Length: 314
Image (cartoon, rainbow, N blue to C red; front, side, top):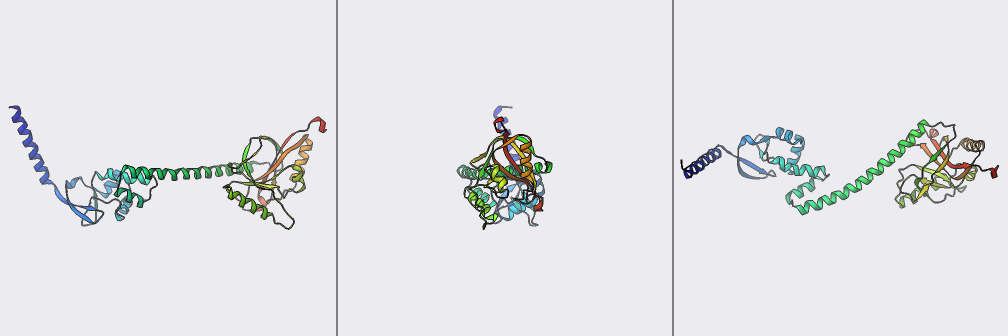
C-alpha cells in the first residue's frame, strides 16, 4: 500500500476514535467556588469520590469538606445528592494548598494567594514566613535551654548529699547580675527582688531562667546569709560570668534565705582542709517552686571559689 494511503488510513482511524471517545463522554457541571456553573466534558469514570481523593492525597475528608465550605478548594463536580467528585488533576492543585499549610500559612492567606498566584507574590510570602520561623526557632531554642537547665538542676537536687560539703571544678558560666541590694531594716526582702526583676526585663533578660543570690565574699555571707548583695539570673545572654575555678559546694533545705547550719559547715570544712575562700559566693536553688510544692523543702546549693591556704597563712 502506498505511503500516502497508509497515512490517510491512520488519520481516518484517529478521527473515528476521537469521534467515538467524544460521543461517549457525558456533560457534567463544573462548580467554581460553589457558585459559577459551566458545562465541562470529560469521562465520568475518571472522577474520584471524596473517599478516593482523600486516600490518594492523604488529606482527611473532613478537611476537604471544610476547604469546600470556605471556597478554598472545591470539587470539580457536586452531584444532586451532595456527593463531591474530584478530577485527578486536582491532586496537583491541592499540593499548592498543602505546601502553604505546611509553611504555617493561614487559610485566608492561601485563598488570597490562590486567586492571584505568581512567583513574585509567593516569593514575598515565603520571605515573610521565614522571618516568622526564625523568631519561632529562637523562642524554641530558648525554651529548650530553660528546660535543659531546670532538668540539670533537679537531677542535681535529687542526687545531692545534703549534709556533705564537697569540692569540684566548675567551668565559666554566663549570668546576668543585677544592681546592689539594700535590705534596709524597714524594707521587705521582696522589694529588692522586684527591683531586680524590673531592671532585668528592661534589658530583655528572660526571668524564666533560674534566679539566685550572690555575695561579694564569704565574710558578707557569714554576717547576713539571708541577705545577698545581688541577685543573678542564669540567662546566658547576661553580660557577666561566674568565673571558672575550684569551688566548695554545700546544700541547705528550706525556704529562700533559710541557711540553717550551712555557714557553720562551710567554715568548718574550709578550716579542716586548709582552704581559704577566694571570691564571690552564689546560692542557687536546685529544687524550688518549679519542682517542689512545700517551700520548706526547697533545696539551695551554695558554691564559693576556694584555694589552698599557703604556708604564710599558717
